[in-house]
Length: 211
Image (cartoon, one colour):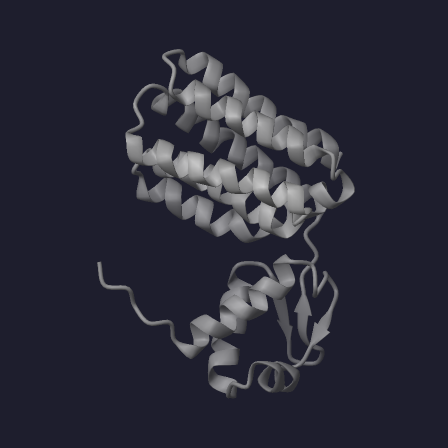
């Protein structure tokens, strides 16, 4: 597969998004296009394109008078994301138990090994990224573009919500990893109800923390 070279607007989007998702620019932060031009050393065109895309994804709001405002992610929105995840991932767990190929389990194992490594280092943001990737691997097993598209659309707000959860509850990191390991083992088994229940409890636990 030939990888498309990233354009300036792609790079601008990723760099601005990374600062928002990591919490460096929290909700309510005001930015100007000039500030972003100087920071990223890019012209107005790719910056404007990136901001339009970020606004479409709900991460910023563009105001003619105030400039660029980083959006707050409300508790209501966080809970809506988790409800959507609950539906998507329990469906995936139920349908994929005993059916995934070796490639998927290799991806799970690599991901889980790195999860343990970054927990020991105390790197919460990297753990959050790996947590997201674990769930992406699960959904990808369905080989359903519509499911993948939905996960892609919610992943940035999901990252922001999960980051806040782990910052408030650092001891939760090891518990989250243990649940991931149990889900991986259940996917290799033959009882879909077990996997579905583990996934549901994993997602519901985070909701209880947010409440």
